[in-house]
Amino acid sequence: MGAAIVLVLVVAAVSVLIGVVRSAGAPDVSGEQVVAATGAAELPPVYVHVFGAVQRPGLYRLDEGARVVDVIAAAGGLTPEADETAVNLARRVADGEQLRLPAIGEVPPPAGGAAGGAGAVASDGRVNLNTADIAALDTLPRVGPAIAERIIQWRETNGAFTSVDDLLAVPGIGEKMLASIRDLVTV
View 1 (cartoon, one colour):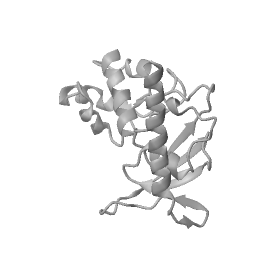
View 2: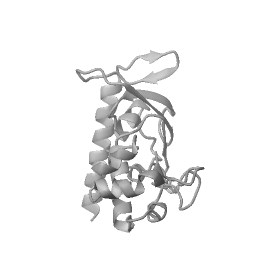
View 3: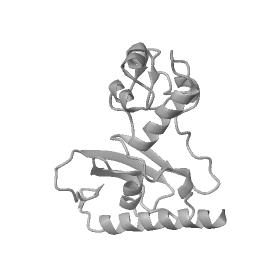
View 4: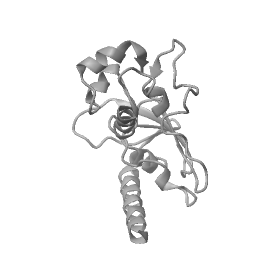
């Protein structure tokens, strides 16, 4: 068990180090911190506000498809107090996302928002796919705890839903289920 934890920490540290090396040559544009694109295709930028246990908290512009590890690298890496197991380093980030990296011993932010809490349900009563937790998603017709968990897992792996139609990419959700909940959810 201890060896597995050490292995995970080493892999995470190497990933962050690679990201730091990749972003070392990134230009600084009028106070905005920017990570240079390395892909052949010109991709639209995403802006991510990162704060907490990182060396240089702030607003970063990255390429579409960037992951949490890329944002951490752009922010100069984690501080020694950072709890790197509190976030999914491989998760894609979404444009406009705010990412808080907790220190060891801090309670990490909830993955999907509190049940019935601010942001889980929109002002019009629809469930927000990007902030709802299992309990909020479970209120939808034909969505039980297993499907709710898959929705949250998809969101953590792929980043924020950009359209209600993105639900079709979640295992177990087909056209009929989507049609039954389309008017009850929002992004």
